[in-house]
Length: 390
Image (cartoon, rainbow, N blue to C red):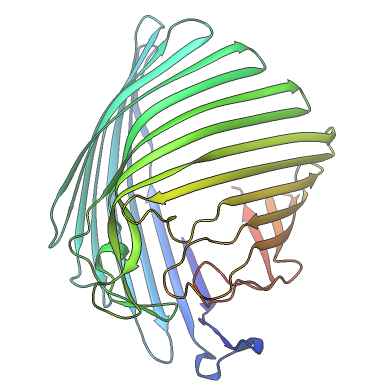
């Protein structure tokens, strides 16, 4: 169970008076509540067979207490999945399964208020060709049904190979087709978000993509670790925010006919002082393209970098997050945009049976425009989290 009460506002008073809230928005707040209940049952476990069932219930409530609206959203998702794993001669491990979920919704900003049914079945075979070569092949079928829109049915195969020439080197490659159904918010929203009007799109369909990857993981010493991956995805019907046809400053989620996302994903970790001080970082290079317009996809940053300096088993950590200027935006393309760099500080400790974590986000109070145009990025904030184990 989780409940979050937060003051909410969309813009500063003016560019000349940052960090001041518009007086009309003072006192606006929102309450979000989440309840999750579920169990994992394993009725059969033998050397050759394993059967697992996982039913779950997820209830979400959101209520605005704003000066100009009292929007609300409530949803309950009932779901379960069944997985059967079968082990044969040691070289094959078969996994078959099925998933089913039904979501009921009550909301005053979804038109019409929908219900959603998602079904899926899949089978996968993990193959051990030798001590150094392993492979995976499988197929998944997804069905998505929602009120007042066309049903979606998607067939998604995958294949992958991992080659481990030594204990410190691992090479991998994969090819797969993926599918994502449109969310309720993407398909049915009729509201204002960050000051922009959003309208429903009942013609929105799920997106699918063929994705390939080639990568390697290398650990030359116990203190040094590297990972690199090249990826390429070709999307059909990619779901993106676009201007609503014939309407000014009004947006909706639409299917981009074809799009490409490719790039390089790098990671490294170095033990500066074993057990006391570590440095790790990740870098993501993105090259995106909408094949219809031959322009980059909106709100993507070409360069994305995260570095973390941590000490004493991550009890103290300093995070630096960087993303380059978004090349393409929707609403105000002539606005000045820049790179974003944010520094966070984290500390945690354990007291008896409680984990205590303190975090200062945006430690240096960087001022920047967030991904949402003409909206400020989050200012410095303080958070203390206490988790009890029992």
